[in-house]
Image (cartoon, rainbow, N blue to C red; front, side):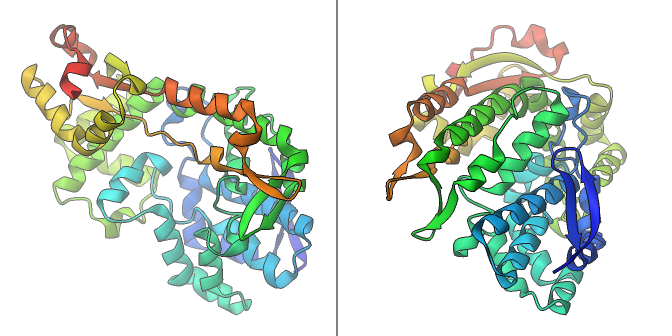
Length: 388
């Protein structure tokens, strides 16, 4: 399908759009993404990080076009793939991944919502108008079928765009990734997306960038404190019965802030603290690797109970003791490398990948956050004792 418009992007330059893609961009579902920040509350730490899910979606679309050309796909394959790249985040709720845990409590994920939008909305009618099957696009978004691995897998176009884009807006130098080199070595083999050994160094560079971005940006302690505060405020609204999934799924960042400002009580106090940057402080931390897998499983299951127990022990009101437990995210270390026709895990062929995975695990911290004025009460807290 012929390109009819060019959008200028600071990361990829000119992004060419056909009429179908333009029609999809003009839907309320896609326009909502302009009002959802790519990185939640990361702008509290990195002031320029106001990029949106809308920009990121355009970037993944561009990379899908490059990948389609690399694989010499026919239009019947490339068009659904490009559309899936454009729509892959259409189901993201306000503040992006910051609210994923709340969505999980509601029994949903942003991937499920994306597929629902593709199958049951104005988007559906536009796809059908251009003879593109919504079910095929939804499968690609879910990572199903061979080509779906390009959108969702261990080394997909999604992360290639967000690592470069987030590095740019954060103003850090960790997003230097040779995307073209990686894509030139990618292929579908044995129903999965693999990378040729000739592109190994470029993939290692991606892993280095990912490691540094997680350490300095995505898991920055101040960002995590702010996002945990927001999560607890929203959880309070949800548990009170005032915030239902049917409403929340359509909200953007502005809607959520407005809701919390007008809510009263705990949620309004929390959003006021965020507005004025009166953030909670960290009073105790322990390495997750020192706790053991059994304790970590217990922590993920009973974190609210443990928060409550600490609050009771130190006479602190519910919601003002936050237990932060970052989850390990290491799917990239499952990338398959094609070495002379044999598929091997990247950890088998790269000492650097093995080292980065160990580094990832060693740096994860479990922390206790509370308002600064609680310092006198919490100065004696020993987090490890409460978790065990």
